[in-house]
Length: 434
Image (cartoon, rainbow, N blue to C red; front, side, top):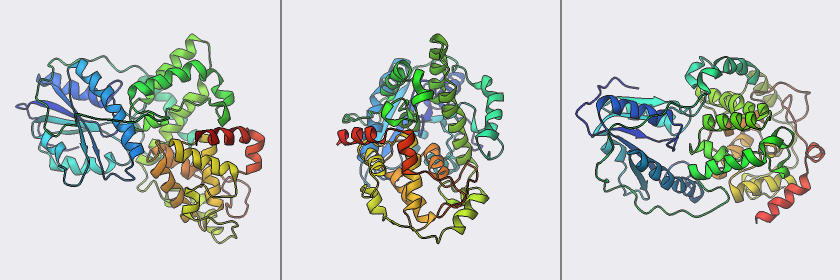
């Protein structure tokens, strides 16, 4: 991302885990090792957490902190240095990355289409006098293999399928030729404590959840994934978002398990690869992914046409946040989000559709949905979650029969949810969480 020369007279090659906070199946770390081995240098892995990131909260802090011990143990076994810096107040140093970069031959980090990498990569690259590389380790087929924004799943699917065999394979084995033996910086965290919760963070927890999904749910995913009370989904989206596990690892594990047990994993792989990478494509090629301007022309036009339609009821952002609507299912979905940091994907679609129906304007509805998603969801602030929210407004969908408020945007009803899912069982399950 810059033209600075490689600094041979350096102490290490630095890898900055902005997004992919893991050791295994990490193409960015693998590239840092490759550069280090070529120069006869060790590798230092840097991971940071600050108090003032967007929507900073104990929930997100704990998830990240829980992952740090896993990372540290794995790196120590491999001979890679590790610095986790937790900036807890404004007076704490805010230049740790640059301090570490002064002794580095090169800096490798993550290519990612949203905050933080989308914001920091251009800024950091221009301030360094060493090479700055951004590596895509979030997608299976790299985002850069697509030249433009894709319209929908049916346009990106054949392109992914054409390239998939090139990328859907284990990452090459690597090892460092020179182990890290530097001293621990004075700003490195040493006593990282984290509480237990429904979704404990870290690569160990991610792989445990993956194994449980393979054993107990993959065989019924196609029939039961849209039935929230069946608990047939993987629950891996928080771990994918925070980089504690890679979609490549998950896809290979699912393929291998399905082959061994004679299962058909196509529906799960469609969600994991085609739908997820459509979301990354959308985020990469859209200037402001959190805006109604990102919608297709037909969706913007029909929502604008019906923006003055009568709405009853109308709820405030605070009422939505506190799950104070007349709808028991919607309230249960919002309480699940508040209590656990996650909503089942099928009910999250309903959750988003009703925010549109009960808000004064589409613009207010989008702002409310994104606020709740970013503040509470462990898989929020992610290409997938923004795409899922905007799908409720017509993104990656087609026009339907015109109706009030929604226009030609797809509508979802409480009656439809009751016909298709066991709403009462879901509401009871959420009540048991409290």
